[in-house]
Image (cartoon, rainbow, N blue to C red):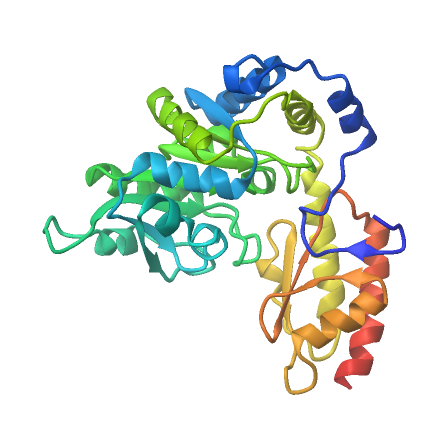
Length: 349
């Protein structure tokens, strides 16, 4: 990334650090389709242990990870319950329908959180007229809710409902690492109520690609079969798995810096007249703010900021998202705040 540009579009824009590149270059590799890549095997074992699950499997992307879990837990014609603004429902290309033949029942949550009562109410009766409810998916942290942390107590209440009804519970934990650092709750504690968990390496941890799915051994065997079927089998991919191992050892604790930078950015934006922002909603590494459409659309604001070297994302005609990450320093945030303040003063005055 050009040093002059401050890229706040996503934590997916990070590039491998020098230490990560060295680890990748020196990785011991083999053919992972045969199960012969020792670096992949170490990564899978490490993530399974961190999440307290029996097994894990390395896949190319977070979308594939979630969709593999949907396919492995369901059969065509089943129904999955998801929060209406969740990534799995909104941003995975209709994968549940296209790849698994699964119908999704979306529920409106509060900042990404659906309650045990909402899940209970949404479960279909045992009647031939209805699809069979088989799976509930939760997202932690929640992207469209601004990086909100899903409270563990509510997760446990939802898990009690799914267990009582014989349903499976999956976590889209693409940014679970952020929840762990924000709360001090361990990955295994967060994962314990779930039958399966996906975690991502290419967001806050800064790897070039890769996610993992973790769960029981028989479930991972099904995931492995569908991964092959969907073209997700990879060969000497230890060069990328090495980046994941490096990130888990070196980049996990530093997520607190991203959270601090997000709060710093939010406080700076709060001082811009005309902007709508709730500081209490900034829990991890995301900042969302509203601009008055009557004066300037979110797209117009983003375009004006791009001209000044600050990149953000318009998520609606009036809403803008910023994401902090290891490619952005405190000094970058301070500079970005000044640019935003000057640019928006001109646009909104």
